Image (cartoon, rainbow, N blue to C red; front, top):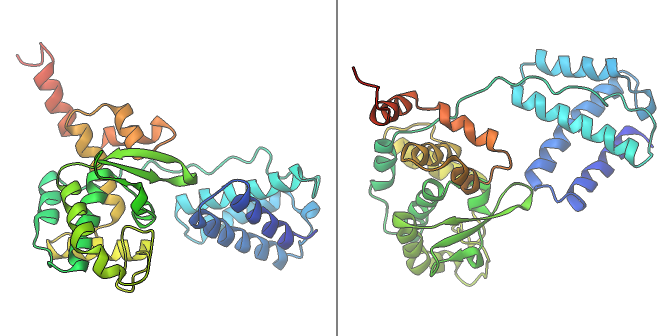
Amino acid sequence: MDLSRARDEYLGYLAVERGCSDNTIAAYGRDLERYVAWLAERGVTDPEAVTRELVEEHVGALMEAGLAPASVERAVSAIKGLHRFMVTDELCAAFPTSDLPLPAKPARLPDVISVDDAARLLDQPFPQTPAGLRDRAALEVLYGCGLRASELSGLDVRAVLLDEALLRVFGKGSKERVVPLMGTALSALEAYLDRGRGALAGARPSPAVFLNVRGGRLSRQSVHAIVEKYGRAVGLPGLHPHTLRHSFATHLLEGGADLRVVQELLGHANIATTQLYTHVDRTHVRRVYLAAHPRAHR
């Protein structure tokens, strides 16, 4: 079996047996297509002919091409996964990536907006149209519940438990978590479901909460466009849905929330990921220290 067929079988395995998201499979597919094409240019199409030196040379080429560290890390993960799959499924015996380390990724503090900026974003006037009600509800839920853009796009009506003030969210790897839906996020979503969603849906039944003007599920790209549009309107150009998620976590921690609770709300498998937020605002740490330590003042 050549590398191209092995790649296709591996991507099918990720989709069917591992339950990976469409976005993950698409990203791995691009990484592996580039990898297989790069090897083919060097006359290598047989998995048994791939060496550790070739893999390292390819990774070096990705870095020299200026790919972001996170993109290089993902590509290496995809390549390691492909070779592991080929060995496990006995498609080949060679395992050139068995101890290949992932490239070091520099720690990057997440972008956040201030509490005042969040208020300006969410308190601005929204059109009292079905789309305007939808946009306000989308922004409120992103910031009020810490959702990713893909999670907001994938949210179904059956996952909205208004009476219990909860959302059932399916995150990365189809992992389910339950998050509170309270305050302005709850009222904005209720208003949209009562007065906006039906007009957007028309005669087309859809399980999705957030709909486009044609009655279909709002795409992840459209969520990005909505956030950017309303951010620009209040002087926050380039605002990203993930910035609202980061701000949700940061503002909770600044308000005294326990790190483990924030981890659960964000759906992080590893608390080390959540701990990144504890480094965002050192002024808050100093303020808490001054207020709490008995000998902080002379």
